[in-house]
Image 1: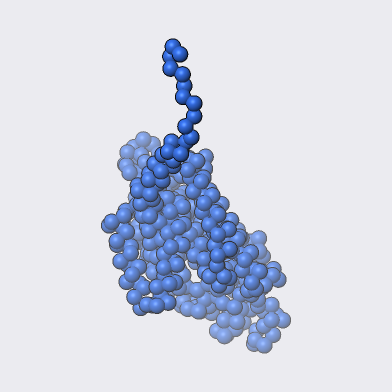
Image 2: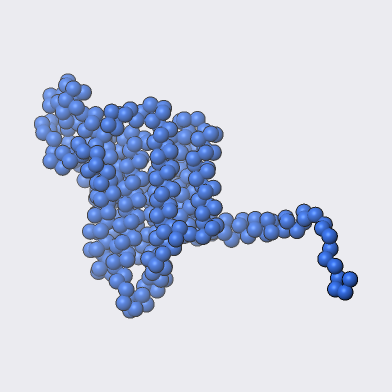
Length: 373
């Protein structure tokens, strides 16, 4: 149900790495960075299902990441904007950026985000509903391939422009900042950062398990079939559009969870995580790790973001060129990503090594008597 024995061993190794090894080896600053990288892994895992399994390449996953992130940010911002905390504003009780833009009343769509239960539902429901509307419109009309990718990219651009243009309602280019507490719990202190990191790790493992459940079930097999021979699947009676819409919605929900955890981990959300560039970077995470491997995509998110941090500290102006070269190189030379390299070269060598070891080291025991002795 959740994969082969080899898949479960791989997941256990990944869990040990992010839950035991990295917290023991890194200081809090670096560990918080890793926590941020893990939030991108949610998107990469969703892309494996959507792109690798279903053949639906979306270049707008930043939209869903942003919807989840903004939903969480709206709740945290309202909690930080109590009448007592904003008494110096001309209109106390509303977020500071609204007051700066001369808005005197909380907009109606902000009101439900006073409630944490509604916010948690919205983190998953908003990206899923938006993905359903987009998928139903396009897949029913058999829009796919490069056309679908371009349309999702356009949607990411439109949403970014909308957020930046509505500064009084969304915080504009600066986004929603100065997020402090979650139900009175200070999310900025050291203990909170550790707790949020572990919460992030456990949620990611749960998402990977959910992905393996889909991948190894009937839906996964149908998605692979329609990826390779879409017309043949359609002629056998399956509703191709429904399956594509379903997996697109699942990927959007995973991205929304990642966005919400990003807001908690980093303490703000802005349109710079919604647009075209971050969306393409998310595809690079998946491509580098391996678009057919859930764990490979998670490792890809960690590796690319770590490289981005290290490289951009020394050569910030060259990072985007390096990212582009990395994407082209991986797609051309290693189309299955790092997971493909592991499965093709490293794993067989390890299996051969393990299978030889017992025979080479086995003590010489009593020999079986020959027939007739």
